[in-house]
Image (cartoon, rainbow, N blue to C red):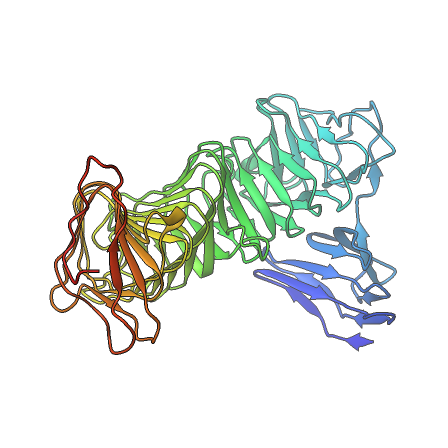
Length: 533
């Protein structure tokens, strides 16, 4: 048995887990459990034993979830001094219009079938819980009608329940919180299932009288909540756990900060432009690096600055994610932390990555386009796919201070558009994505002015135009300081001009440059200066 004092839930998300161990039993005794602001907490009980509290019996609120030792997860309540799950207290009745009562905690379970229909133009409930494990269910709110939940209200799916939909696609209905008064409201959308969807088609609005509503997403890691409606709430959005997918540019209301906490993900879908300030933390909902911001379908744009509060991951799995800024020197991303771009599709960053000494990493098979006038000095690491530079300072330049661009196996640095890249030193150890060149001239006449150090078998390719390697002084290409020999191949249909020497440091053979076979018999080999093969 373990004893803690009182638990005060404030600010971000808390987590208390109790593990009884194999064949053992564990009881955790807590004092009172209280909460201020928009804090959230999740409790995980032991396989054998319990979590007890001196808090009075009753529903804690949608801000607290409880997962039993057997894995069943719902909101939390106190029953006889013990924490347990809460799934409502009033069961829906088949074929009966749902009565309006702000004190009703509605359960949509296996004892009823069909659609839940609120009885009034403005109907009140405290919360809605989905527990039906057999059928997908829906709450059908008529066009122009509103379902208003409690001041701290919410909708949840239990961990073993099926899909739940609020509203109908294309029908202008509304969901809100705040109860029967005209004050502010907190609307919790809690999906405790990793297999079922919680979908909100209704637009989310402020409370009557203009009380601002704050939308908060909690539940299971790996869960998905979807918003499709046009919303007008102004209290902001906090994604605490799980993924929130938006399919409407106005899904997150008209004002208030959008916050993605560590362990959560904001997904964009359907070709939308999100013009709202967003703060990001973490890598997404799982160790698979889903992305704190993730493009899941279509070409989507974020046109306001992203502020990063921790190292973050940004992922595009389909279509193109564009981080838009007014000019190349306007911040698209700000915050002094590392940024990882990943996924199998495309990301375009049109503005500045103002991340100080933070490092930038590219993973996955997609293409990352850097069009910003970047002033960071952290290392750029390309571990997969293509990084295409569209600005002379794309790889970072702070008043002539550079770091290093490290191109590893499977990665490609691509130049296009007639650039002279700032003198960023490059460590080259790749034949490129699909063997298309670790350094690749995609189009136009482009120049690299930084020293290239070859540290593995590598390829430099020009597909079109001319790639020139021209440093201010010294060697254009050197071998790394190891005893291993390095092979370097030049190829492609375009031209490559090496204006300065190719040399070693002090051990091993110099890089062994060789021309790849001509791409076609009608074109002569690309010119190359430097030591012969």
